[in-house]
Length: 319
Ligand code: NAP
Ligand code: 8YV
Image 1 (cartoon, helix red, strand yellow):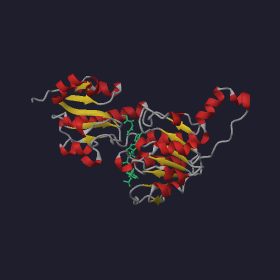
Image 2 (spheres, rainbow, N blue to C red; image 1 turned 45 degrees about the horizontal axis):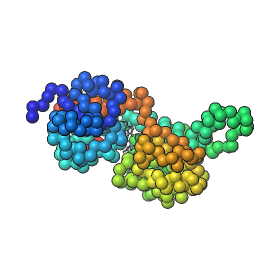
Image 3 (tube, rainbow, N blue to C red; image 1 turned 120 degrees about the vertical axis):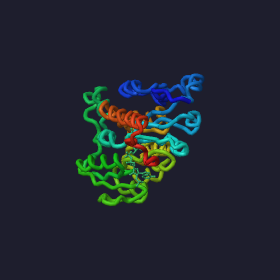
Image 4 (cartoon, rainbow, N blue to C red; image 1 turned 180 degrees about the horizontal axis):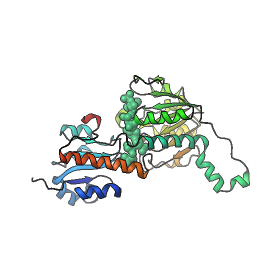
């Protein structure tokens, strides 16, 4: 087949305008056609040369198999746990992502969730709005965060940005990961359970996928204990959500701040009903500034590929 001058790109998520507009200037973009119009998709599938989507986008082997001309998958997000990278590599299709440009933003939200759940900020806001301050007097006392012990599950780029912020709060930091990191002075624990037993706040910030599925389970939550808080800004799959709901209901842990969930955007009613949780809709990187930087890098990867230049940010498996 003759390659068209404007390569055809399949968008597997709804792209924000600040990505879609520059993308559409150089490429022919097919917006989620594989989901919205299977017949039209069948007609254009042989022409698709690139896929782009976000950190939560599904790029399955079945989808890849339908795209014989596919050359690249560019993810606007650092996580790519729903991309079948093995299937892509088998066909020598590089996968790219957007590491580094969102570290500060995600770390900021992790700290915001830690403060919100310990100091009960959303509950306090509702307290004032409902006029309960005037009617019932001051709120019950909350829990201090400054100076407490923080355990980071996954001390990568974002984990380190979280640690830097927590140090400014005088927190004592420890971490777990598959490896103890040379040159890192924070104590390392060999498992999430060991770490949880030695901290007041436990923050999950690993990749998702099979390797980390339910890394935070009922045992880890028991080890964290009734004064402990869990924050998850990683992926919903990293935490056993049913075990977490039970732990929150029964006071096994004190509370949780959650940006990610097992079946997004659906959040179990039992979780939404709890007063000891703060819930945000997978928005840790969602500022105009950072989403623009992510879009720019996702586009730069596509442009580099089609110009025959080295890719700015392939995923580690494709380097
Ligand atoms: P990164 O630099 O690759 O760091 C990942 C860390 O996780 C590494 O320190 C790694 O350490 C650790 N890890 C990997 N597998 C593990 C396992 N099985 N058990 C324990 N630790 C494990 O990645 P990053 O840029 O910091 O991003 C991390 C993740 O954050 C992303 O993949 C994504 O899932 C999530 N994220 C969420 C949002 C959001 O909107 N909520 C936004 C951005 C990113 P070892 O290699 O030593 O195990
Ligand atoms: C976004 C994310 O939800 O980067 C990630 O891994 O989860 C988030 O930044 C997403 O990728 C936006 O496209």
